Image: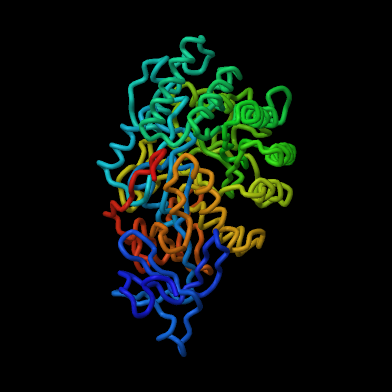
Length: 508
């Protein structure tokens, strides 16, 4: 019998009757789970039955019957740009208990953490040290701001996009290393937005990351199926940097940056991993992406390299589908930081759907949302409003990535089992981070001593509700605990919750 079982000190809360999934031990069965404070303190040894309650049930000051539900570790999102109260409340409704900004990161990690703590967050949060935003700050004198504001507002400045001198590279790497010391979880590398910066600097960055014992999180340099500068070339750069330095290189959203070259890229990654090269991957279950309209790869003359035309772009400040190359050029000139959604594949077509699935089903690929801020009409970000104002827009991955994983990939298509989906949403991302953040070893587990970051959801109804024209939270999450505190109880969201705590590099 686990600690705090019948006859021992009672737990604060006991969840009873759920299908409990612990991705580390492989537990998948009906169990009681006890929580005291911010920690899981008990898991019953065997399934509880009506005829043996006195022998097997856990004692709790409060007992919650969650029969028919799944109880799992809360989802760990490695890739969330939705670092606001509104964005993270939506992610909580999608089962997320930890949402980290690791691809873009922050130019000042300490400032980003302080701002988040002052504002209050319903789920756990953290930031990498940003290579690109540090370039903006150091080379273009861009004023420090929250990551997404800084990224969008300075997109038309010139110097962060071009190669730097050796002395400036050293200054940049020293700054990034300092931000890791300030708690940055590795280094965020948006090199796809500054593709002309050069391989030597990228290699030097990887070497510094290895010296720091930190992973990098890369948006790869190119998105294209046409030579030169293909998606494959970009992926091979990441693999080579890892092989050449020993650094842990993580490839963000391989579903979108691989474009239609996922088979070649997956083969290269698999062979590299088999030889011990430390490359990891993530993906989200959509054939569309989202970024700023001024991104280098969305220049009208570069769209054919992605196999799309301007009308596959939706400009979110107005909601319009971009009519033609002339309109695209106008938007890029007038509002380079404006949000846009890019439809690069059509999931209703079998060939496109199978292509997307091959990126999602690559072994040990983490599910990560790439959640983006909600955009109000006119383009201002929605940061504190609840409910979300009418006519706001975002990419549906921002509100329903995990609901879609369980609703589409598990229930509808059957390409992932429910335990494997839990594994990819919890333990896979935790293990990607554990060397840099030892405290992650207490997350993503349903075991005594693990953090009480828990999601309880209905496996039949957990699903996304939003789409490209409607912002709506997922349905089906019955309870969500962050550090033992209810953020969602009986399906009701606590919109005032500040249960989230900062996650920092080196944290134990």
